[in-house]
Figure 1: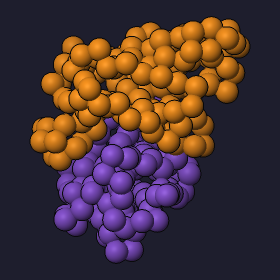
Figure 2: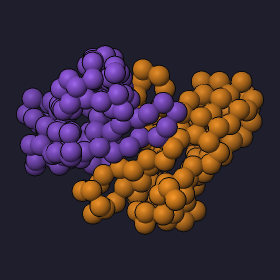
Figure 3: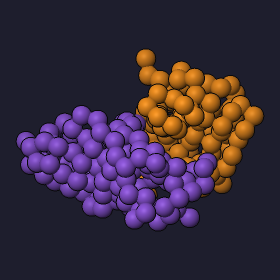
Length: 116
Length: 112
């Protein structure tokens, strides 16, 4: 089973709709992240959480909100989706002393979101 | 703000060649640098992580180097294979401890 899972994997929605993307992890990591990837722009950080009570804005948080329901779950919401939020969204985890080194990041498979 | 650049954006080589991918960053005050591989429609797979105190890391045919003072990292792939075809991304952590910054990637095509 995958260590970091994301649901849904693909979603098409209309402008103005509320959308929630979910991320779950079995790695036992405290730190979780949401990124979006756009062609030619690389990955940009939306929000990150260092534990259940710690939520921080990233580089491009406007139009997004998050919820850390448990250590293993981190959800990203688009309150009112707009077309320029069409992108590939990734969830990632890391830990201070995880396998592979200090703060190595592990990514989920991504959610492809299209806003019409 | 930290900026990460990867050149070239795309690279095509024949099978068996050794090759180098480049990553540069503007602020040398980093905590670590990580190289990833991304296959079409897939997530990112971690390849190598180099701590700021290290100069290089090796895994199989891959070797990554880090020169913090010049703001550069390279990923060396030995004896390339068609299965190496993918987009390679580098990411740095810092100077803000809480932030990761990604390059836009180098798309590698290894021709049989």
